[in-house]
Length: 522
Image 1: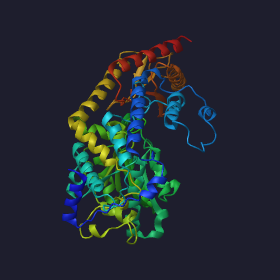
Image 2 (image 1 turned 135 degrees about the vertical axis):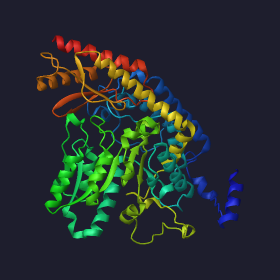
Image 3 (image 1 turned 120 degrees about the vertical axis):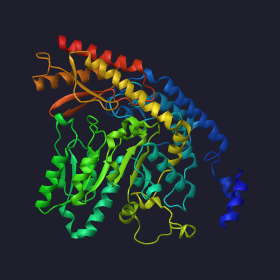
Image 4 (image 1 turned 180 degrees about the vertical axis):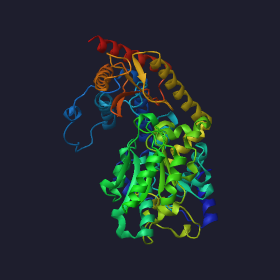
């Protein structure tokens, strides 16, 4: 529909009168290139060409750059230019190509297997570009009605695709929003839980609040607890063990909460994890929720990485009992082809968020047009007023790839990780340390003196050297490590890059094997 016809229809429906004011005198004094359509097209083509070239040449770069601190600051001038340079944009893009790109860790590389991925796709990138080009701010419904309603639609779409319970969706009385990261989701829900609990027991008892997690929970939870005013020694990180594959034990949680209550403290919040950073351990959410019930504890499930697997029905068993959680979050930008940043958060009772994070009085940000319609003002759900139009990007990914496309993407990566796991198990010098559940394989090189690793410290030193040598191989994979139960283990095949193919996985294993041979000979 043409813009004029669309506005005429809107005027007839809602009484909105569009006003267009053009100040020709002001226009003459402004730089014609700031938002000039022709210049935008020309420069946009330059950017797209650079990105396409970057992806074509991705394999030429070492995944992690061999640079030292200060290298870029020594290459670029210390002060910003005062006057416009001739063809400044082309010159700046040349600096990007020649100076900045070589110094990056290439997260989209097919050989980047060290960390959980920063997912990328053509549609995700173009959706991000479209969002930046439109450049709106959506703190309230009135600030950008289509943006708010698209976000409400998209989080329900995504929630259904992930097989989340209806009680977390707008369709079932709950609701969701799109944030930047899981760190924000944890903090927002923790603040909502804190205010709800203090309303029951009295605000002067904030120093009695205690929160619980496992020793595998992401450190973002401890940071959020400190920001929310929880005393440092009131964050209970419950030890896990290898026998339980580092999942949080309901029995240990029950004992910890009982001890806190007996000490006069008030259990407030439990952060359970679907796919811990170290080993992708899965906390048994149903049993944990049963433990919290007598204490009225808010349960949040952090599914930052592995939440994406729930799009596949065969993985949904890992969240049995999720209908009892108070909130749930996952990062679509990690594995669902949605470029950074895009964290989805759902809550069972949005009113708790609004009570904790909404304004205490009416502001000029509110709009008369929305009164009486029970609209969602997303500024009341999060810490920030200025919010990005992330829903447009997420909507495009869902619409253009479809749920089947996302399932195929996840299943392909899990299949490659399974193949890598088989390679490791076939070599008696190595041992798979934890059960592979998704697309991360955790393993180590056994100590040379006795297969089975009788000398744990010797094995740890051995695996540190393997990590160093593999990452130093410029054509090899980039991998990372974890330290669990005193074991220094290797994390490889954290598969998630859109570009990763079978041969990258097998080639990476050959590099690991070759470096192990050299180290063992020494």
